[in-house]
Image (tube, rainbow, N blue to C red):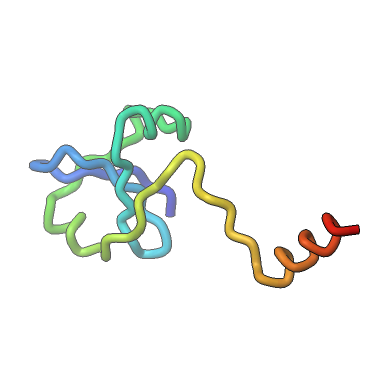
Amino acid sequence: DGELVRGKKASSVYVIEDGQRRPITSEADFNELGYEWKNVVTLPDRVIEAYTLGPVVRPHAPLELEEDTVARVAISSAL
């Protein structure tokens, strides 16, 4: 997990995570995430395509809270 890969023909870079290839959609995002281009491994396209396509990797993913956490925050704010 965490391996940076790209295919030989395609320019897309992916992070391998939980058995999925998660695309990084821009150079700006790649840099903001703190990745280094020297760590990107080039693999045959068929190897890349064998991984299921996962969600896009974003530098600032939205925070996901469990329902009870949201309720406790709302109650605390009301007090």
